[in-house]
Image (cartoon, rainbow, N blue to C red; front, side):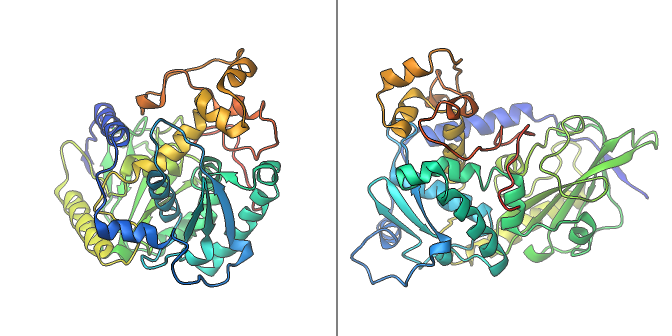
Length: 401
């Protein structure tokens, strides 16, 4: 099959710039909200508004906010939670005032008001039932919002079910029309070797899909063999959806580390930042045009959505990342709040554990613990989360079995 050979830029430095920008945004307070924005947030958090419809207990859960860094604000937690739900396919109707309801540091999340379809609702109900049956939930009356995100957005098996990703690669591919001439990336900063990119023929959001075929061997030498597939398309709520498939076409939790640095769907979301991305060096005009037009059509479609997600606030997604990063790498202060003990007691209990600095968000601290270590010392039982939120993990939960 004919291909177009290009090179993909080594973009380690670019990711460093992106991470620095994210840290800068997260470090400084959010700009003052407009009156309208304030009314929107008050609308779904103020008790004096109209009486909400009766909740669906199966789709309602209490989430506990544990302050993760100095001066963290409730609005940042809300923003991060809304972006996490949006990444999981929820449409989040803008005028829905009772989606989130705060009482102190606990927020009631009503997924029956989040704009999820019936298939997703069944999966959500099963996940919430497991969370509410946990010792943590029974003890605190809520589950840590960071653990909630870790068990949904950061857990590929749950992510696939909640977003409606196709179980088979051929089924996912057959839903779209692709150019007959794929593009060869012969020197990639994402893949260890060559990769083939399939671009869509159409530009409408419901026509946009891209496939990256990872493999072994050389495209130049004609020995390239596809070993797995990375699939990207657009959900009805305007967010990108990622799915990873092995050579047989079966969904897999993460890309193979020997082939690519793509990691898990969470890492794809972190890197793409809700945008389509093209090659960075020696651009191919046909692909660049598709990416540019596709992004423009996405912007137009997103601007017409009546959603609580404001796609024009490009850095708001950072607050979703902070919810799980700060949970996975907690400070002694955060753990003290989780366990309801003093910081001195935490440091005593964890004195034999190593600490580290946070590189992506340095303001989180330089004496942070690992979630895997911390959870084994918790005063109550907790649901085990994936070993890593973005990279291939030794453990990935499947609470839907």
